Image (tube, rainbow, N blue to C red; front, side, top):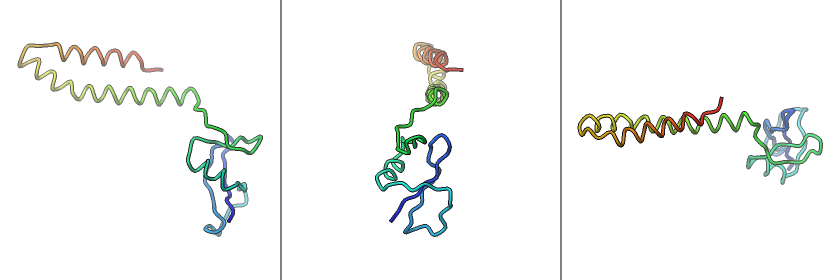
Length: 115
């Protein structure tokens, strides 16, 4: 049993093949060990194209920024969903405390969004 894998130029794995399962294995694959296959399959690793060994994946700054912004946007959406109830409570009771607290949190979160 032999594993083969295809990699992008940046070392990210495209796919893997197993000689006992796949019959039409492309010619541009690289033979990898069982241990390396397990490492790539479990995620978080790319191939060091110079050494041929798996190395931990380090996200690029814009990927980190996108992930952070997505998390912040999701949190803002969650707060805005609860804001409707806070508006109703404010109208019924005259107490603006909860509504103001939600508004303040949303303002702070929006200020954390990265361009």
